[in-house]
Length: 316
Image (cartoon, rainbow, N blue to C red; front, side, top):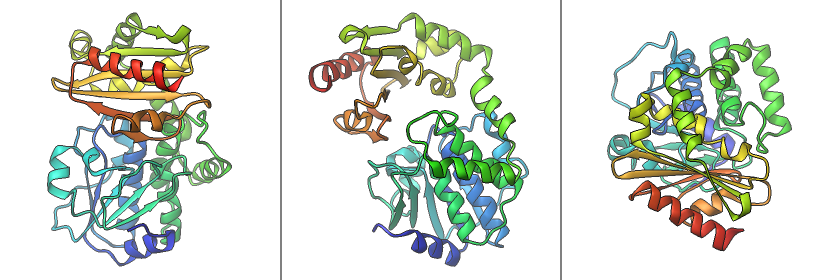
């Protein structure tokens, strides 16, 4: 059931013993939303804990610094920035996927799986929504909460460069800085600091960069072998995704990433002329207008050929 903002706030006000779920392969938005909400709920005197189906990259350590673990039987389950239950990851999906009471999301292609869903497709990030919910709950916005929310706002907008940014996004960011969000260190950590393995992995990815349709489509195919060669981990993929669309003349950027022996993820980034979510929806995925993804069970190079064929023959 789709609910309005006031109903989402009311559901959280009346909830106790709350479990917060983030999506697998966690980014700054799902983690920032989750830990900001956790801190706010605890400030209200509620018990809250957070689970993520994957290891959290150490660069997000500031989000959970000072957050003590808690163990209790959950009575209310809320997901943040999760567009469909399978994105929770296999383990969390099997255990909680059909038990989510409230989903807070901002994806236009969201598939309803929770008992109640509050979704703002025009919001640049889930963190924007969570920030407004926290304010409506009457919780004082601490420096720690502000830093959590700012992280999600910044990372989901490419440091406020993407077309999903609105005037509200900037107003919220300004308020967060006034509340003490450490905006400069966060942006340096998120966008300007890379490990040696990440740089080596990026170099290999650029070595196999390919162009199609007269340079309108750029594709990077990243394999597990490339990760082994460089010592990279899954988080290194995040830095690869925007590279193809940064090339002048490229209208559709595609990153094919072998995530496991039998799983291949595809990330699509587009300019204003094309809809990334529509491309990925053709393959059972989804996301945002300019950034979306889908998943295959196949060889990464066959996946590359399948997606490129569809884009060049049916989209351009």
